[in-house]
Every structure is written in C-alpha cells, then in structure tokens.
Length: 438
Ligand code: MEV
Image (tube, rainbow, N blue to C red; front, side):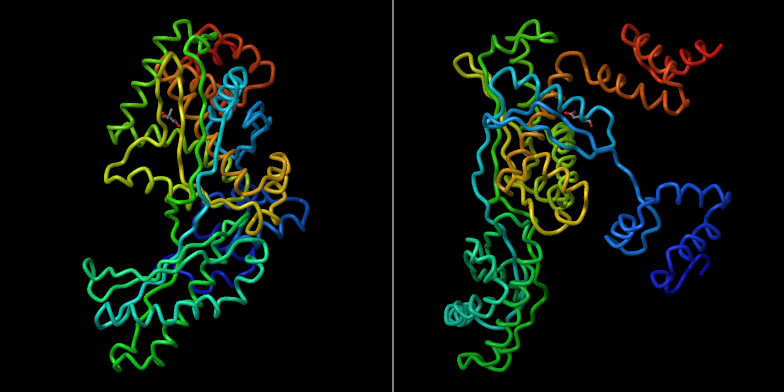
C-alpha cells in the first residue's frame, strides 16, 4: 500500500521527520525548518516533551493566558488559561472584574466520589452470584491493600464495591461497581490498578467457590476501567447580586438585562440545539484551565456532557433565577481533577499554573475551574443578549487578521485605533490595511 510504513515508532526522531517530509511534503526544506523552529533549544526540556507521547516530531504551541481578578470565596486568583480561541481570556477577565465589584464567586464542593467498574459475564443465577460476592467482598479490599495503603494513609481509598445485575439489558452481564476517594489525585491509575486487582480476585475466588458448578466457576472478565462519568464528584459555583447592582457600562437597564439573560438560560434549559452551544461556551473556560493545570480535558468533557443529559435530554449546565429583586446565576458540574500525579509535577508550565493558583488541592481546583466555566458563560450570554457576540469576537479577531497580513507594530496600533469606531469585518480590515499601505 502506498505510504504504508512498518516500524515507524522505532525510527529516530530525525528519521521519522525525514520519512514524513519525503512522503507527504512538496517543499521539504521549508517544512523541515518549520518543524525544527518549534523545537526547544533547551535539550532537556525538549526531551521531556518528546517523551510525553510516542512519535513526537515537534511541539504544538497553545498560548497560555491569564485572567486576573477572580474573587472566589473572598480569595483573589489570577487564572491560567491555555486556549487558542481569541476572545476567551478577554471574556473571562471581563466577567471576573464585573463580579469582583459585586461580591465575587461563591463555590462549594458537593461530593468527590470517583467510580470504576469491572465488567464481566457469569452463566448462572444472580442469587448464587450474589451469595458468592457477599462471601468474598472483604477479600477484594484485602487483596488490593498494597495498592491502597498510601492512599488510605492520606484518608482516601476504596469506598464501596457493589455487585450490579445488568442481565435485563445484556445476557449474563454483571458489574462490580466500585467507588473511590482519590483526594488530590485525579485517580485514574489508582482506580484502574484496584479494578484489575478486583478482576483477578473475582476470577480466582470463583474457581475456589464450592457453591458454583464448573460453568459458574468460569467467570469471564470483559474489562476493568474507571468511569469518566462522575455525577457524585460535583462542584457548584454561583454569583448573585441585587438587580440594580447589575447596572454598568454596557448594562443601562438592569431589569431588562436580567430578564433577557434569564430567558436565554431558560432557552438553554429546554432546547438542546442551544444548550450544546451554551455549554460549549462554558467549556471554553473549563477546558482552558483544565489544560493549563495538566488535567485530562477529554475526561472532563465526556463526564460533563453525560451529566448535562442525565435526565434523558441534553440541557444547560448553568441556571439563573430572579427572586425578590436578586439576580442569581450558578453552575453545577462534575469535575474529576488532580493536583498531584500525572503531568502536574512533570510539565514546567503546569507547575507554574498550579503555583499561580496557590498550589490548590483538587477540591480547590474543582471550584476554580467551575468558576471559569460560569464566568465564561456569563460573558457569552451577556454579549449575546446585549450587543451580539460578533462585536467582541471580531475585535479579538482583528489581531489574527493583522498578524495574517504581517502588520507592523505601528500599523497595528493605527488599525486598532481605527476599528475602535468602525465595524470589524474581514474585508474591512483587509481594505484598511491596503489603504494604510498605499
Ligand atoms: C463561542 O466559542 C462560544 C459561544 O458560542 C457560546 C454561546 O453561544 O453561549 C459564544
């Protein structure tokens, strides 16, 4: 087959690059220079990044920005955000400042339970399996003690293991459904190691169990894996103020603003097409902080969206109320995050981001991340229900267009000034650059 290669991972970095360039690129030397331009000159740092994954050829940069002035439970934070979308950090900063002047964000961790499952098949009656399970339940915990002892010393560990009968939905299918407290670790490795131990205990004990016939003794473990759906690892963040206090530079009529804002949130609570975009705006804030702090944004995304559809329909993660003249806006989301383990002690910028956040515990990080999501959503819905989203977006996009045209610092400052009083569109910017240059 053309372009097929065997043993790619065994090639050296420069052999990999050579093969890619000669196989896929027309201007080989320009592409080689580009790949190398992104290498770090500090060899040790580059090796660290090379070894995060397989087949690394270069680095892929994302900007790391900071949104200052987040007042969370009366403490001030400057929040690191790794993201490419031009308006996100600006929007977060604006929201932070807006709520700083109105008492800040209040947050609360509701629960911190993580979940993992051993999926297996058993050919026999549930009652027999259940008797067996109850007779060996403590053995699961004892067998995993080497894995759990450090976590237990710190106050975490296995919370419970249940046997679940899923045979109504799939023939012979059962689960060990286990819950865990993993403290400051996201806990994926800890949970998966415990689950794999539970699986081998299950198989071993079944072969020894006198109550089973030979077919029943032959339990088949299909897989053992944590769940990224963590509806009991929940955090809430909230802002509130009297409606009159919403008055600001862009909000002349606070009553009208509050009403329209609440209607926009209500729409996202019942209309999935809007809810997905509404929640996407929330994830702009959440993912950016999750990424900056070295956490697994795919896990967070998967869990958050499952939570958004937990009642059988996808809907908004934020909610709004207006009661007795008080405007309240809040988010409740599941977030399985870690501040130890994984990338947290390896990636220098992750360490930097965590220090910037005052080296938070996982519980504190959950609260900061939830706030970033709420702030982002506040900024988006505020723009949508007042000026429209394009005004802010295009202002930020202006810089991208200017960079595309390699505008000089002087051209940039003249054009930024010009577009303070003119509508930004791609063609208007191009025309303005051309006029300036002619
Ligand atoms: C764009 O990245 C996010 C928004 O579309 C979110 C929203 O519509 O609420 C502005």
